[in-house]
Amino acid sequence: MSIDIYTSRSCPYCIRAKSLLKSKGVKFNELEVDGNPELIAESVKRSDGMRTVPQIFIEKFHVGGYDNLVDLDKDGKLDPLLELNT
Image 1 (cartoon, rainbow, N blue to C red):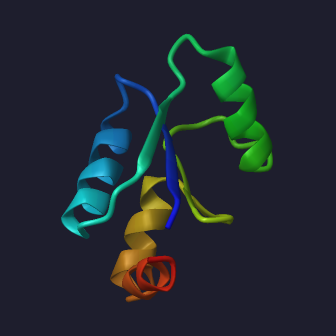
Image 2: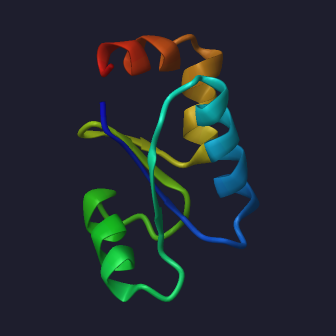
Image 3: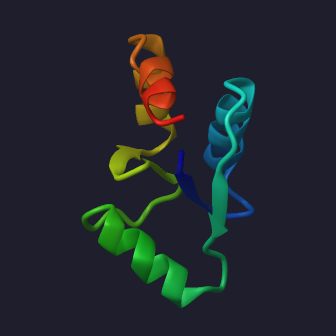
């Protein structure tokens, strides 16, 4: 399974998103965009123009940001998505 999360050091939502993913016992690839214009451009392209962090991808599925991740979890859709991609 491949989970990518684009983050920034100073972003509290990034910290929360990583904490939620860790609580699910999954590993993820953190891509810190601070001072890295190439990663910023990559994140914007992959997220269809979103310029905020975090931007979370499970395989090719664009979750969105922290609120989207929490909504998936509350709706019971995150665990199956993670299990499908293990």
